[in-house]
Amino acid sequence: MRWAEILIETTVEAQDAVANIMTENGCAGTAMQGEAPVEVRCYLPVDDRLEDRLLDMKEDLAELPKFGLEVGNGELTINYVEEQDWAESWRQYFKTMRVGKRFVIKPTWDKYVPQRGDVLIELDPGMAFGTGSHQTTRLCLQALEKYMRPRGLVVDFGTGSGILAIAAVKLGAALVIAFDSDEIAVKAARENVLRNNTDDRTEVHQAENSRFINKQVDVVTANIVAETIIANAEDLGNLLKLGGILIASGITTGKAFDVEIALKNQGFDMREQLKEDDWVCIVAIKAN
Image (cartoon, rainbow, N blue to C red; front, side, top):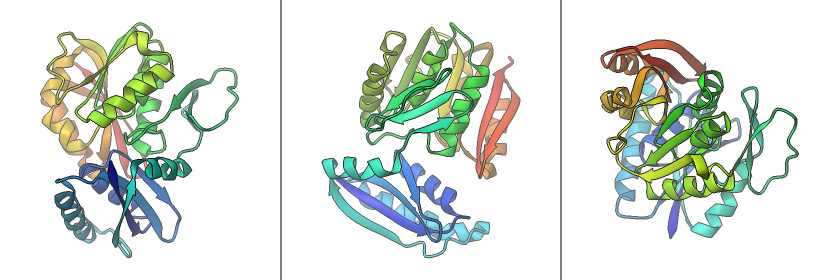
């Protein structure tokens, strides 16, 4: 398969907004490099959706100055690569990192000697979102570390690489039901679950929504985008037991209020917001 490597040069101020535009237009993951300018990079499959996605990205970029963001050059560059070339290129952006108090996220090709107390997650994300390098993933991992209780039931809504599902099992979840609508993400998640020996307590499904799940759970993680959280607020509420915890991210600071209103309308009480740069993770409790 051929992939379009998309590169946008922008400012430090606008880098998160540019990455969010890429995510909202189909990029499963983004990488940032440099400081002045910052290069924000992602990959999209070369298919009949590519032209429309690129046009939408350009339109969204043109809107950023209206929100007071100086985008700098803002030029969108496209290179075409084969899948094996992409796989080698992507490796330079993903290094072993520590997240929260205990998590260590290690790519399969990196070397790391675990320290006492480490919760080690080994990943090859493929084309899927979720290496731990993005603020939203880090925030979700920190929230899981705080709120996950042993033997709990978990749903990972939009699992991407499977990183949050794996983390939940390693923190003691009895069962994680993970799903994603994207075939590539499901494949990557299944491989990563096996790689981390968490397959005995993890199911990974390809599904457009959560309505195939016929049980209520203790924790739901949803590291997606604000619009998807809002559109699925009722389903998120239905998934959780009373007192259950929702950990929701992929939310920019400008959209956090709208997400909170949608969740409150479905019986959630807000517990806290975790923030990093322009990104928010909302922790909410199913109250009624």
